[in-house]
Image 1 (cartoon, helix red, strand yellow):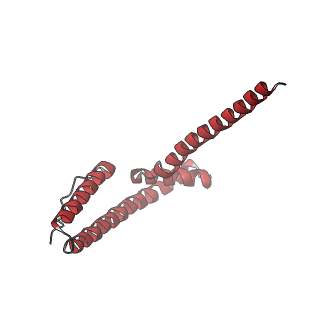
Image 2: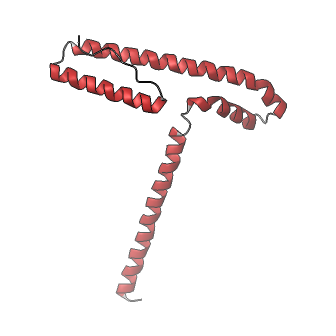
Image 3: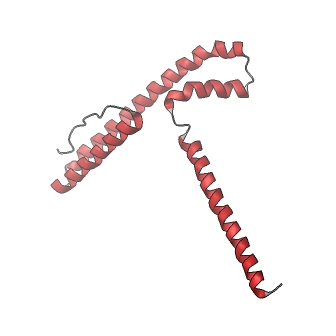
Amino acid sequence: MNQALKWKLIAGFILVFVAGGISGAFLGGLYARHLFFGFHHPEQIGARMKERLRTELNLTPEQVAKISPIIDKTAVQLREIRRETARHVHETIAEAHRQMAANLTDEQRQKLQQIEERHRHWRHRRFNESPVESPSATP
């Protein structure tokens, strides 16, 4: 085997190794995205709970029918807890912004208002909420 062929084989192996690494990273990223972001749909929590309990406990269709109202009620309660928590977090941050505004320049207050506006638009897109006007950051 001559020297040129040996280097071509080494380069080919390295190329295949790098291509495999890139493919693995891409597919791993897709899976991670599905795993971390695919399950965060609160409107589907009841269906996921039912399916998980059905498979892990080997529930019969009759058992699933009996526990479905309990799971549905729980899902509604969890959605409400999530809404209340989000509202409380929003109010806490808005209060912090109001308190911080007293120590900011006019230019900084304007930037803080822009941050709040971006956050409102993000919440509207992410949670399909109507953009809620929060009190101004100016004291």
